[in-house]
Amino acid sequence: MERILSLQDVRFTYTPDDPDGRHAVDGVSFDMHAGEWIAVVGHNGSGKSTLARLMIGLLFPQEGTVGLFGDTLTEDNLWEKRSQMGMVFQNPDNQFVGATVQDDVAFALENNGIPFEEMTLRVQNALKQVKMDTFLDHEPQHLSGGQKQRVAIAGALALRPRLLILDEATSMLDPQGREEVIRVILDLREKTGLSVISITHDLEEALLADRVVVMNGGRKFAEGTPQEVFLKGEALTELGLDLPFAMRLSALLGEQGIGTEPGTMTERKLVEQLWTLRSNR
Amino acid sequence: MMEKMVFGRYIPGDSFVHRLDPRSKLIFVFIFIAAVFLANNTVSYALLLAFTLLSILASKVRIGFLIGGLKPVMFLIAFTFLLHIFFTKEGDLLFQLGFLKIYEEGLRQGIYISIRFLVLVLMTSLLTLTTSPISITDGLEVLLNPLKKVKFPVHELALMMSISLRFIPTLMDETDKILKAQLARGSDISSGTMKERIQAVVPLLVPLFVSAFKRAEDLAVAMEVRGYRGGEGRTRYRQLKWDWRDTTALLILLAVIVALWFLRG
Image (tube, rainbow over all chains, first blue to last red):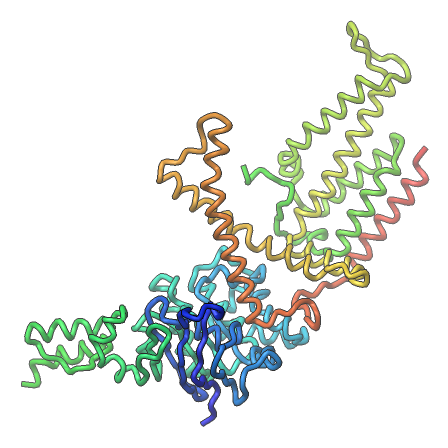
């Protein structure tokens, strides 16, 4: 499978002149294949947002390399690489450039010199993909946070990116908005096989990924499928991360002598185990 | 307070005037402003006034609404009217009360100047009432485009304008939030001496500035990620279309100017 992102021993510090300065990202390596969904989780200050900025060339590492779609990211190929990726940030208001929904979606297309006729098609299409196609002329102040984030995703999709980076895109949303955004991402993955990196501290969201990278103090603490990673249980809570609700519940049930399978992560699986608990005996 | 302001507000609609291209409306208003100074007698002023009223009718903006919103300007008009009445001392004496003398020429000049003022304000209000701020920005960008040759940053200016317009409601919300937060902490900006009130505004402005800068930084990063590199090689999503309406509007204006030219004394 094609490798679309490859970090090799990336080191970055915000204070390069200070020899004792802490590295925000300290020797991180991982690869990503086309079509994968990788969740990068970690506590505040774990370096996960810096990592996202390194991936899209907002920052360049002092050591190590960032490879994108087979080439090393440099100042020269920066814009060409960027035109193949999209990024959605945390604050829904602060990334809305256009006056209306359709202007905002078209912004990246205008920047890349896409002709007008094609732009209208792409804007329509992208908005349809996030189910916001009836909001063409809405102004940002009349949209909810979840709707604004969906517009931001559409703005990225309009460029037909090969990689979508979500930098805490759901962390400022209410539960309903978060649900909307996650459903859109799941839907996109199913229909287009888009590669997604989501930077998050929400472990429920991380559960949906194919692979989870846990960051701590600028280093990679763990990497693996959600099942593998969350089995570390205690170690993750020590890093200040919350375990998924079902896991915590199943641990507490265990203390009460109600044994469930270790590694039960979703509510549905837990419920299934609980209602079949008696009938098995 | 904000509801009554007419100046700078936009009322969506579907009239002849609404559907005009922002470029033609801008050109129209600029030429009209110059043409107003052609009028110098009763017939020509009457023509100006009639033409303005016709334009308002064509825009389907309610006249009552327009007049109601112009009250602050009315004060200015009344003031200049009175100035002219009392200080122009030419022509026949019409009326005298003690030291107050009103002359014919004073009355005439007062009325002319008031009409001139009124017509200017009505026409420019009509422009902003029937054109969304973003369209005005688009129109200005295209009209100012020739200035690029002398290195005038037309695209940057237009982008700045449209981003400011886009963030006005966001920052208003924010101000409201900060105001409430400070009220909850016991700050009071509605009473006290002038000095105390001004001092009470400081804790409102500082957080607002801090957050505005934070927003600006976030926005700059988001724009960069989305491939923004300045105006070079950019295409436009908002297309302006010049059709028969625009040509008609400018031709009508031309006819009015010609008529003014012949009617002036």
